[in-house]
Image (cartoon, rainbow, N blue to C red; front, side):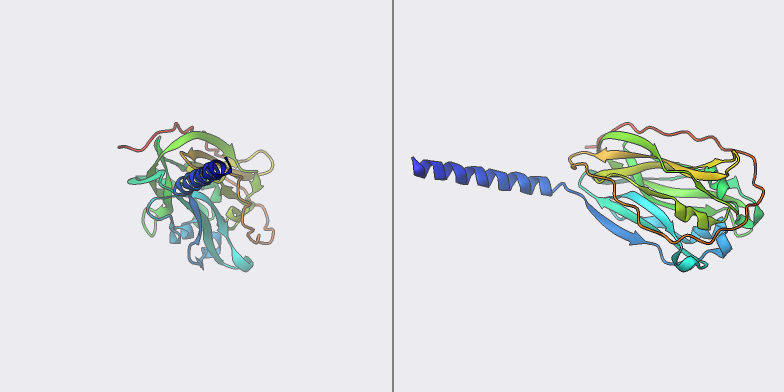
Length: 252
């Protein structure tokens, strides 16, 4: 009887090890990344085009934040990616329409003209601000979407923060980080002009199939610049629309 019991215990342990191994093959691994530090152009949004936020093959974006070390005139993006067999290799290259800025590029609020949104069944893999030409005040976001398997999607918003003189430095107040096991499928800056000018991000993320969900990572700290005087801002407000993502599987 004892011998049979031991055999059954060994079989149970063996099955547990196999199950754990099978599960571990589908667990995603996060990677911490950053773009190189570069000149911020005294806060001009045009200088954001120096930064290409890009994840690798079979990876999708899970969060990002602008970083301004030592309150100087250099900036970079901090970002995280997730790798999983629920993320495919098929990609779609997209871009927002060109839209104007003003005041020599010190017009952070004009980023709200651009909605980075992937089609159903795709997640953001890369994004980069682009200028129409070296003398133009028109900008757009160019971005790449990668095919993913997901189970459900959620739309959220970050907390509202001030943008004062409209320089890009104030983007470091905002960070997007999605829960473990999810990937980013859409994001858009939303501006406010109701007595306390400010902005926030509206964004959507989707849970990957076969990956256990987890808590949302704590955003990485980023030094904030010294307060700057408010100035008159463009009164035009771009409407915000949260995009809902419907789950879709990878093509066979």
